Image (cartoon, rainbow, N blue to C red):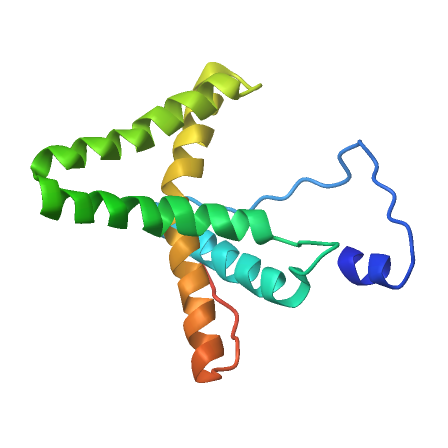
Length: 149
């Protein structure tokens, strides 16, 4: 909605105060995975609708999903086929990314580590959600809500 309002010439004001608390009631990994899949689908849809300049809505987020969720693993697997199994050590970039993100966190140590792990692991379902959007768009399948509960 904010994208459309800005395109119509309106200004968007942001308040720094919390206005609501959202309880997604996600208790199982499968629910979280589906939520991330849904988020990837929504990001791809948002980028397709509003990714052109000046908004560039969700463009960076979708690129991150493809990079970490598909390109890095594919390059590592191809390298492993070409130069040998030791190329699989390059997958250590994922734990390194978790450490990097945890160190940048501003929450408690425990929350920083959980958040960092979720951000890194979440790139895989995000990419799959984006792939689902691309395939649906290619086959002209109408979008339907992806439920996670």
